[in-house]
Length: 311
Ligand SMILES: Nc1ncnc2c1ncn2[C@@H]1O[C@H](COP(=O)(O)OP(=O)(O)O)[C@@H](O)[C@H]1O
Ligand SMILES: [Mg+2]
Image (cartoon, rainbow, N blue to C red; front, top):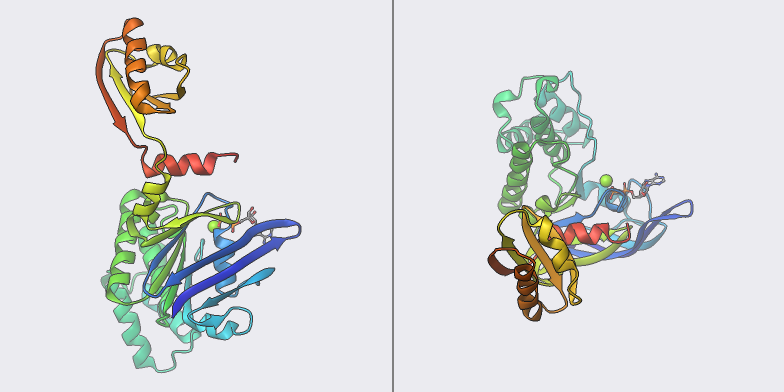
């Protein structure tokens, strides 16, 4: 059974289409990334999938439950970390989870206590269980908020921007915990993020969305291959590359020239043919060429280019 399946999922706000005919499938146990810039429609998608708002058109099932006809089944099957999770700052970590475990209808107190202990231990918060949330760091709060989303042990977990606002170290810790969580249990995790790093490091499959529509979908490796684009010539010259860049810009077969860290990066219609021309132009212009390489742009550059296009 698929954990999530959407077909033509669409949401309009007045005349504005926030999510535009989105179709994708998430297999059980997968860590699926919805990657896209701010305003791409990630949060709106997750809100539809967790029955917080209804779609304008299209359909979706979550853990086999139809979001239109079986919202109760959906809510029971999903845990959600929202963009701005609110915890009770004046309650302790334990009290927070106790509150939500009761709210989720875990009736037996021993069962609640066991589940809460399991979660606090997993998120390395057990020794801080009696501290009030107000003294927690941002990263600790985020871990507790994820634990809260898991109190009822849902098969599907939605994490909306789980690393937003965290320093690099705390963000890495969250990514590691997500990976560990998915490895240990066969929980399906859908992560919304605008950080390529999150998607690249933790997701088994990624869909890049832009203005509400899916642009590409695949494993991080597949995306790297498909989005990397044209190889480029990278030339290192003695001195400042920028002062020689114009010589290269004048070559007809050259499409683009960037200077990054003093290196001249040349995109051309055919790098193999262009390389000798580039070197000749540089040498004739008085540059001392130190090295010439062919490189592929990183996934990050490709992603940035993709989301910048006609933005
Ligand atoms: N309740 C709403 N009313 C009107 N517009 C909304 C509403 N929620 C989201 N939008 C718009 O829909 C687009 C997608 O928003 P969102 O799903 O929050 O994007 P993301 O999570 O990818 O940053 C944005 O342009 C946003 O302003
Ligand atoms: Mg969002």
